[in-house]
Image (cartoon, rainbow, N blue to C red; front, side, top):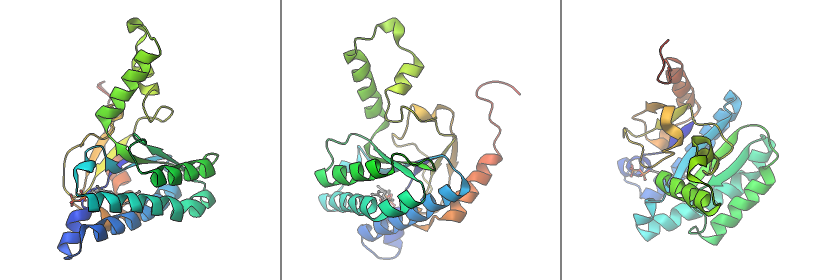
Length: 223
Ligand code: FPP
């Protein structure tokens, strides 16, 4: 499952709160949803926490989101390890503040042998950027044109060893992908909800799975 966690700003605005309060509430929702995903036996969850385009926001908001990311990785580390969750950060890395990278590496190292839910946190992530990086790696490896395959491209993405998502969720009433997992989403089922992300919880995730179960997947074939 992939989730585009949208609506933190609107959730805050509705309550006459600063946008930072919305992001903090979003972090709490993420805690609930990750916990529920583990309990429900979901194998892979990838959440869009910061896009390559989010740098355009006010410095204050960007700085706050970076602080929250550090806080999230530090705060959840014991619980993730106890609950057998494996965590990985996907995205560009080198443009992120050092403390975010350090917190992510500590989390990744600590949880790398866990075998339960695999949580990917996308930070400074962009789908097009990911494909550009993959092509650069392939070209740099000296690969011949005739050896380029879909599998080779998949293997060079941040999600190299993960299956493509079955479900792509977006909250807050927006029906677009905003540069998230462009390659991997080729056959995902899209599920949209009007709920703002901070209002999402275990019941929301159950609803998502129930919606998915109503879908008929043919992958371009015929039943
Ligand atoms: C979109 O809401 C949300 C984000 C850009 C950030 C997502 C971040 C979290 C859920 C919080 C914490 C998690 C980590 C690991 C940092 P928006 O602000 O675009 O909402 P709006 O469209 O209503 O303004």
